[in-house]
Length: 401
Image (cartoon, rainbow, N blue to C red; front, side, top):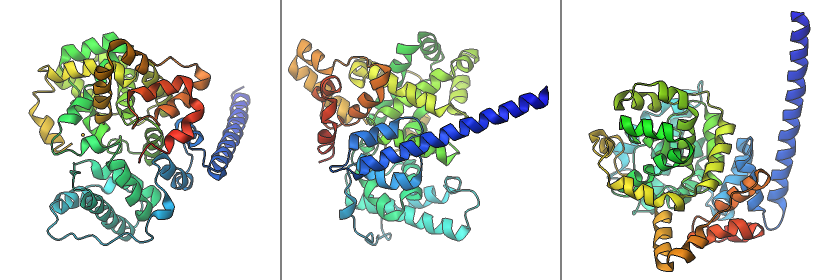
């Protein structure tokens, strides 16, 4: 009997593997088709990046990531310019962080190859900062840049990291970390909407949100050991709104509900539990859930609560290590612009503009992809999710002017 069950299981696994391979081939073909049409179907590429499995391979990511950030690869110089390291105000800190980043490189990589990549990593960071003096380096930035370097190589990585730094990561790169604190304040309202018991327990423990700081500012690159999981999340985040990492942080906490509620209800215990992120998370399930929560509870709906939390003296806001843990961090500029527009338009009119119907399961990926296109367009653009999905390619042309 055991042998029979084993053979049956083996046969089923074989069928499952064949089915998975078939789905991957079909998805790869759909991505190729979206890349080959004129104009490129960026909305389809976003849907592919969000949906199960993401963009599948680094080879595909090299072709698709530039489109997700609207970076025309034909204009990128073949050879990046030389970087002046001497007397560079950021060089010493960048060097220290890069030297400590050994675990971010594939295990077994020859030392000579890794050291060469580390030199390229330093150059990319200094090059982007040199071109954009309004940006300020923060510890953890290198964790994002190294992911782009390993996937794309120095030439493409430089261009994409620069676009990412001046848009998605812009709020982390202020002289102070005030806006990063504000971004973290969106975490608890999301959790409260879904599970009041977990929310109230965390509030009673006064744990705050410091445990999620490194998740947010590195796009989880610093805390996940498997590079496959890191790039899968980057597919998702690049295709979506800049605040999607905070929604993903919320679904991780919600997924660990039982562990949280079984914990001692004090700051130290809960902070220790949550800061140790599991490595065996069901990533596809959590990605899908984060997308659902973003559509159900868009940032515009949470802005007031986040602002109220910002003014409260919680354990997190008085935690001395908060400023030390991540000096010079900033994605809430979009939200603040929305708030100003909402106030200018008046109550009912503005409410109508940010209203977002809950989509059916069949259209969730499409709507979520379109939401990723509204980043630079303010509150009014959110109504397009319901009324003009077919505009997605045109909207994308204006995403990053």
